[in-house]
Length: 257
Image (cartoon, rainbow, N blue to C red; front, top):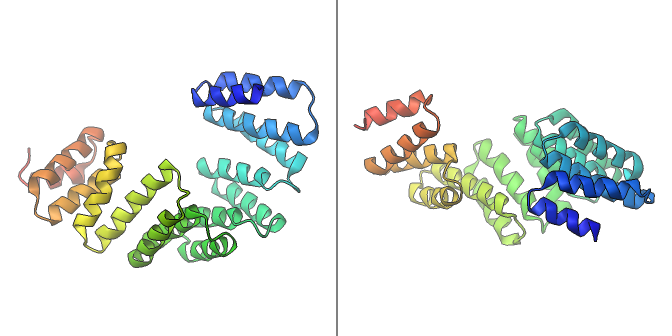
């Protein structure tokens, strides 16, 4: 019941309350497996509460307890490091997990995400290939490879992977938003501006402050000759970030204020 209450507290954004509940459970001296489970959950709560040092300590203790037997141990800490742009540490955890659990695609996928952020697109694509070979039903693996293709100037291949990612039906709301933004950019690269705008519209309906997507949609409108809509998007960008001199210049060139 306490775990249900803690999960409910996280759902209500009451992270400190969740931490209290998990800590109370740990104080009852559970066995190794249950202790690891509580620590993983408390680590997540600490991360959400913006207490990264404590989250890292919990995740590290989990590795000491069950790192050799539970793939989530290295996976959780690797994701924790990745989200904080501590890429070398994330890669080390994903690599350790890949050695211990060679049939788990999450680890080569994690390596691919790190390598993509490091600009090592060829190596990243190889790791995503391995993740997909191991677990071909995970849409998130296709999404990662699509982003690597997109960022390395291969929009046609990216579009195929975006389609395959959606087809798996397992993407989260946030991952679908990433997909729409990336697919829109791939269409933009291929000069299919109407298709690009369709994807950008979906993203901006959910996240109107997504500044890069506003820029891309504005340029898409500009390329289609829709000056009014282009100016509207560029003005929205400037409202979010007045330091965008290149966008201010575009507005002046289009005859805006």
